Length: 177
Image (cartoon, rainbow, N blue to C red):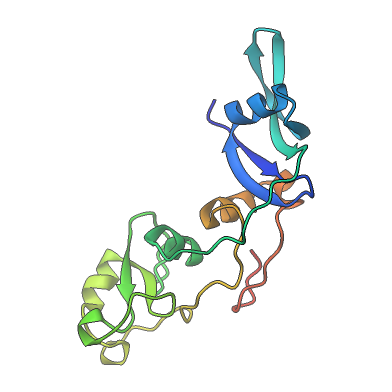
């Protein structure tokens, strides 16, 4: 029961990603309708049920616009789990301050990037111009703020059925998410 389900508000706006068990409970209680189903089935007391992939709530849920928080997870998602110095794609990354904290660099969207351990050690606490390293892209705060978490949004863009419901954001670097 580890499959994820996209939850839409009554106006088809993406609200959340939940586990299949929670989605089935919402459908069974009459709180949500199934829009798309998976190919897998789950055995229940009443018989076999098809697992939902996308559900829509029957009643509208008002939510304030979320704030995209700066964290390791969101920086890695913004940088696509790619070292911004050498281009290594990995889950084992660190955070590097472009302007080192020792020299007054702040922990902000414009100053932190994903970096592999080798590049982070190589750069150390030097300014970028003191090394032979270059950034793949200038670090910036993402302009888009999805209601679902950034990591779930980026992984959800890879699921064909979900792509129809997730808004397309064009970032500063003209990368379509």
